[in-house]
Amino acid sequence: MGVIVLGLMLLSLTIWLGLLCFRGQFWRLDQQLELEKLHTTSVQSVVCAVVPARNEAELLPISLRSLLLQDYPGSLHVFLVDDRSTDGTANFAEGVAYALGKSEQLHIISGEPLPPGWSGKLWAVEQGIKNASLLTPDYYFLTDADIEHDVSSLWRLVAKAEQENLDLVSVMVRLRCESFWEKLLIPAFVFFFQKLYPFRWVNNPKNPTAAAAGGSILIRKEALERIGGIQAIRQALIDDCALAKAVKRSGKVGKEDTGTRGRSDAEIFSFPASERLPISMSSPTGRIWLGLSTLTRSLRPYNSLATIWDMVARTAYTQLNYSPLLLLGTLVGMSLIYLVPPVGLILGVVWSNWGILFTGLFAWLLMALAYYPTIRFYKCSFWLAFSLPAIAFLYTLMTLDSALRHWQGRGGNWKGRVYPAK
Image 1 (cartoon, rainbow, N blue to C red):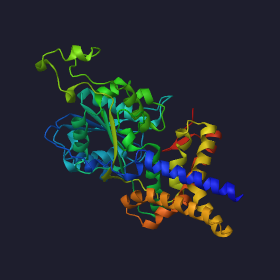
Image 2: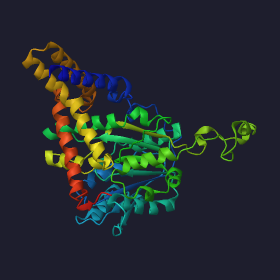
Image 3: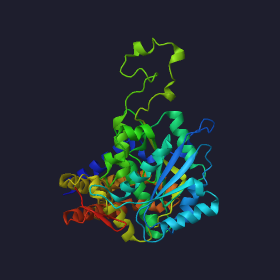
């Protein structure tokens, strides 16, 4: 028995060493928008922000106000889609714009009934984009109605896209972390997301990993058209990552001259230099960027275990492609990575087995070391770094519950709508 436990300890330790050394340095949190060296001199693009809003009257005085007061040197129009709200969302939005003297900048669209085959949010986004396209924008800014944007948020996103010729730029906004359950579970949500989608891999055009954060996505108009519009992902419950995946897969290596697609490099560079456009002005290349934001934040409260549980359970099994095998692998993997080290440490003490004890302790320390930067980012107590096994156990149960909901035919439930899983 001791040999088996020691073997599991060593396997868990090896996995943690591999994650720290070879998983895109996901734990470093060095991909942050506010750390980027950006310039506003060339930021003059036309941007249309699209905000799907369903019963968001309570948050709009903060979120919509922050969007209308952006310190953006180019043209910005906000298209708020009232997704059949029952709390006066549209009236509140009009009042916010009027109070700021920004009524001409805000366009309110009354949402149409949800057609078959669409998720509610994406149908609202589709309607917003359809109306915004009449202004022929350079970019669409897809954001949620529960996000409070820093005044510099938009110009930073556009500057990043312009300077690096990106099709899509997204930031995971700072999630609310005030209540006990938020402090316990929200940093881990970010940690697990970054482990699943290492931001360095996402931002590497040679790596197929793709992801985005739905609260703040800037997408180039041509890129959205190239993938077939929002309709291409109309049924996706994890719509942000689906959008990023479609954009990254659609990209082609850009050529210097917009009239040289399909030509060889020798043919391209035989053109006079005066007739060639620089790379930064060539057709988009499917490149995307995802990072964290220290300034833009989510207003959505998660004051109880139940609210966080529902948030995770709504899409966790979707993330596993509704596969029982992937679910089983996830349950085994989460247990091996997060639960085995502390259990082994306890058994090592009980059995007075120093090999098991120190192996479990070392693996647990590596786990805490990986998690600590996220804990520090959210300004939580350092001891929470050592609570990751217990947190992971709760997330494992949430994932299992997500599968149970799917098998019971409940699917995803959001804002009063239930989406049966396909």
